[in-house]
Image (tube, rainbow, N blue to C red; front, side):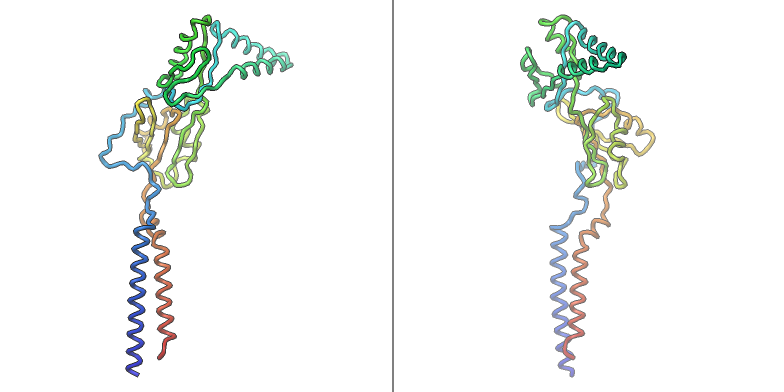
Length: 283
């Protein structure tokens, strides 16, 4: 009896050591290769990172950049034809006919053409050819084109609109990023955050990054929206191409448990297997 008991004991010890080794290997593999703790946090910055100063008043004028789509209209005599089209549309509405106004609106739409800003900042325009507009704001570009067309037109009026303006929003939670079109040129940071659903529960309102492109490259600004003092940043006007990233708060415990959950399940299975062998083994 003693010999049999010793045999069972040593066999169980060997099984326990083997299961412990398997567990250690599985745990190490999970921690080394399968760890996903805070991997969804982007744009990490060191503690001594120097953010660019941000002035919400000076940065309101959007400047044309490569890959922008520009809607361009040109009228002579300071927009005399545009005024007549507008008057025709109004007259059609007043008379109740609507046909004349619709025709004038169709003429107005047909007079709108879209041009893409090339990577080198130039735009291919009728009669002018390739002309550089990147780096100019809308008013500067309109004045520049009016001067360029003045040689062939009397008192030209140029109208430019960027048609593909949008902002990228990352509200502080994985899987809920959105692209917000800028319909209103004076859209505020607070408004685009509201359109994207606001800052999520995991988002840190103290650490909002605004990444803005300019002719030199990109500037990175850190905004604190957690206090009433941050209202001056919340009311600032966003620009096309802005990236608004709300950094999520770390969730070390929750994500660590999610990572080691399969390992704990394996440990439970091995422990149950050892207990079953001990019960079913020879007495």
